[in-house]
Image 1 (tube, one colour):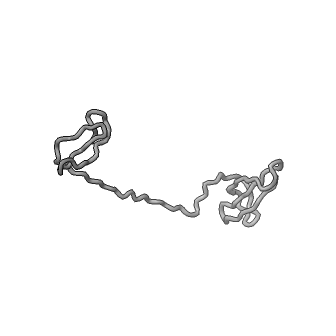
Image 2 (cartoon, one colour):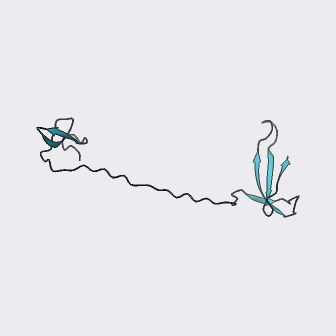
Image 3 (cartoon, one colour):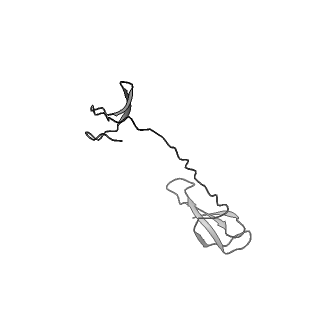
Length: 102
C-alpha cells in the first residue's frame, strides 16, 4: 500500500492500541482491517549437464594417431607475446590431442 499524499510506502504502526498504516509524511489510514503477508516462492533452477560435446570449430587436419581427416582446433598464446600462437588440434574420432607450432 502506498500513501495517497506523497506516494511513499505505508508501514504498519500502533496508534492508541489500534493498528493503522502510516506514512512518514503524517498520513494515517483509518481502517485497521488489513493483514500483512509475505510469500517467498522457491525458484528452483535446473542445470543440464551435456558431456562429450565439442563447441570448437572443426578443420581439415589428419590425426597422427588414427589418420582421421577432421579435427577440432583452438589457438593459445603459449610463448612470448612477440611470437606466434600455438595451434592445438583434437581428433573428431579418437579424441587424440596434438599441437602445431606456426
